[in-house]
Length: 386
Image 1 (cartoon, one colour):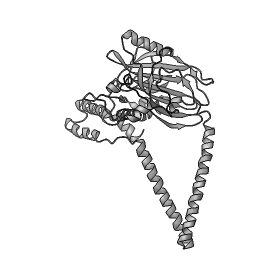
Image 2 (cartoon, rainbow, N blue to C red):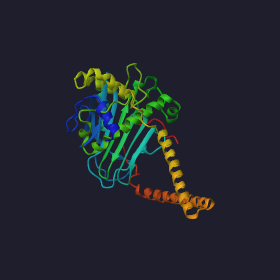
Image 3 (cartoon, rainbow, N blue to C red):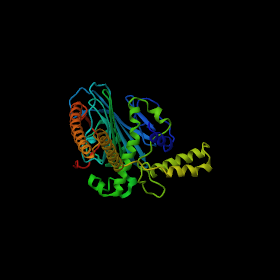
Image 4 (cartoon, rainbow, N blue to C red):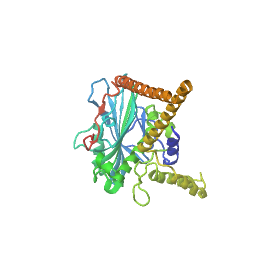
């Protein structure tokens, strides 16, 4: 785990007891992480109730994928369901991988990142708005809805969803986290339009999506360990933070690695001070350090750095080519012509190399690009946007 992930998990996570490594049972509560078919998945801080267990099926593609274990967990808050986690994982191993999911490929989702994808394995996550279908769903989902209805818990119909798809040649862990977003007030999915166009046009929505994307990036570090059943070693007695947290003034923090996480960090620090682990007089120094955490780099930061690196490298390369040509010819004009010829030749060679690699990778991704979908509890609320 990187320094950022390790620091964040160590400081901003609330102290909770991790569940024992055993089969989930409907009605039990778990915290920190849960386990299904030997694969573990992280849970945002707080208690989660196992509301439905069952089996799922693979849709849209033929193959001997076998039975898919399906679990639905609910986080309850008063008389409503605050969050939902749906998880799918395989019961038998395959030999040619599990493909990918449409949400990690298509245009129109609010954010997505393919960390890697080959012919036999892949890892991606995405952020989008989803809505509950009127009918249908897996046995686990129907049981979860009945569980909520019997307990008098209001089930939201629209969610902001963060999904993860991790697979290797043999196994898959597919998890989707649905948040009702009522902490957002008038921006809650039940009250506002969250299409890609409206998010781009609204700075507040854009900040929320950036928060969820940052939270997904932080949480993604845990899935590799979870697929191997080693999540307890990473989390210890901690849990990942909630992605949407109301701060003291009643507003939602616009910075996932910022104030929302800062609030969790400060609460954790106060607990440590109360337990005598750190000194009360040092809290002000710790709080100042939390407040001064730099925000995560944006996509614009990445491209600006990329452009600057490309320009500086090419200036250096052209200067070296010219210098070597001048040493050989001792003629400025001839050296200029030679340098220009080298630049053109290298550019054409680079294009040819890129085309060759694109063709090779396209052939290797035949299986990795195949869509393997399950029966999910929610569907995107809007058509893809080009």
